[in-house]
Amino acid sequence: MATPSDWRSCLTASERYESIQRIQQLLANSGLGQTAFAIESEAYKSAGSREAYHAACRSLPNPPSPHATTTDSPPQASHVVSHPSDEDPGTRIGPYHNCHYIASGVTASVYRSDSLALKVITETRPLEPHNPHREAKILALLKKPVIPLLATFRDHEQRLVLAFPYMPLTLAALLDNHQQPPSPPLTSPQIRSIFADLFSALAYIHDLGIIHRDVKPSAVLLASPTGPAYLSDFGTAWHPTLSAASEPPDAKILDIGTGPYRAPEVLFGDTSYGTGVDMWAAGAVLAECCLSRPLFESRPAHEDGNQLGLILSIFKTVGSPTRESWPEAAEFRTPPFEMYRAFEGKGWGEVLPGVGEGWRELIAGLVRYSGRVEAEEALNFRCMKE
Image (cartoon, rainbow, N blue to C red; front, side):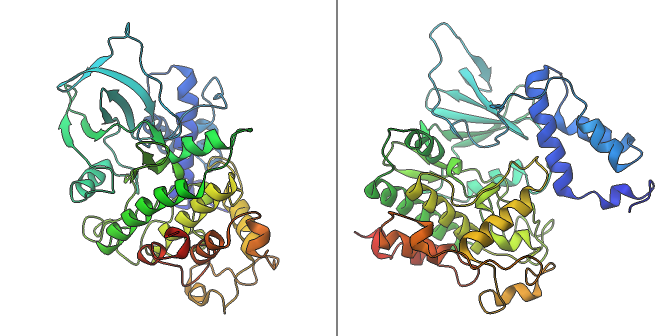
């Protein structure tokens, strides 16, 4: 047990980030004029113990509503965005007038101005792996089918602003619509069109050595329900040059990814992970499109036991890893062998009932412990060409 004098050294980055997320949710309803970063930082500095720190982070008034927004994605991250009324003049951001607030996240607030989405960076102190300045530098190097960064500028408060083309829909919103009965599931042509763009984007960035690290439905922006699709939300992306100083290739941050799309290697301490984390996530998203529900169960990040719950869900679905099925894991900081009850897993026919054989074959190649299908390979699967 940590003594009062050394409790801070035992507090992980993940715990601090979860505290900030929790505070962000509380602030959404409290009306307090402070930032989550400032409140968490003060608790970290002034608390005399881990228990006091957590108590301080939980002591804000007014618990969050079930629908409190904490996303740091662009405005269309999880919903179709409604149009502002003619009576609402909006606000001004840099040279743009008539800007209408959409959503806020840990590091940014997002506004719509006609055909643009403006991401206003509200926190100047990056909490790794979140780094909006690095995000802007990475996006400036990229092109379609990644969402294009049209401009960066400073507003009248000298806050960094990233300008993107506004997209009316995300894959998350599309899935939400189709998960509500009596709506039919996504069609194979829809899935094929969207994932042709997603796999092309991943092949493109992976060829440059870039790892997205947060592939999820809300990071896939759509111009229409059938595409084109654009990969977005590079706030936690890893770049072989731009990230090298803070995250060497063999010492990458593990607190990456979102809920049911997190790859197992980061759950078991592999700091040398590569582009495979994106391919696992893409496979989980593809399975969700085929099933109209998430492939794995995962609690919200701020809930206790969320990581263990995800591990057990993975094991129950695809089976517990062995030294034969995951030889690389023997070198992990926390090898997964013999730590948990062994699960045999299920066959893909049982995991993906009613899903076509071609899609099952591709998902099985992506959602596996070792030897995952790469993005360029995925484009050549039969189901992507039918």
